[in-house]
Image 1: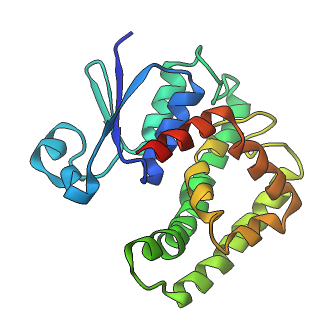
Image 2 (image 1 turned 30 degrees about the vertical axis):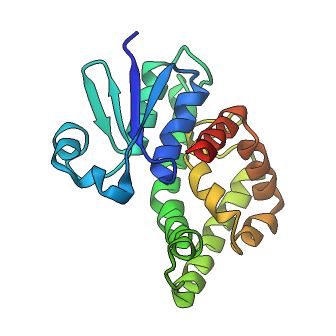
Length: 216
C-alpha cells in the first residue's frame, strides 16, 4: 500500500479531524508538520502542490493529492473500508442517516462552534480580545443546535445511528477546544449530548490524536 502523508498543524481543527480518521482506520501514515506561524501554507510550493487555497490539512496517498478535511475523511473511510473502525455504512438507508448527520455538523454546528473556538479558545492564546457580543450570539445558536442533538441522541447512541461514524468523529476537534471554555455548560446541561461527548472523546484513536498534539 502506498504511504499516506498528512500535511498539517496539530493546532488546526481540520487537521485533527483527518488525524482522528487515520487513527480510527489504523492506517500507517506520516505526519508532516506545516509551520503555519511562518506562513508555510501560503507559500508557492504548498499552494501548487497541496492546496491552492493555502489551508491545512492536505493528504498524499500514492499519486493522489487531496485537500479539504471532510473530503479526506470520506476518502479514507471508503478507500480503507475493510480496515479499522467502520466509519460509514454499506446499507444505503443507514448511510443516508449518517450523511444527514455529517451535513448538519458541517452546515449547522461547525460554523457556530468554530466562531466560539476562535473567540474563546484561540484569541486568548494570541493576546487578542474576545468579542463578548459574538460569543453571546453564537452560544444562543449553539444551544439550538444542541437541542436538536439532544432529541436525536435520545433515539440512538450516536448521531448517525447505533454505531460511531464520521457524523460523530467530525465534531471531535471543536469539542476539544470548546470543553476548555465556558461553552462546556451547554453540553453538560443536556444529558444525552453529555453522554455522547464523553463516549466519543474517550475513544483510543482520539486520545492518540491528543497525544500527538501534546508532542508538537
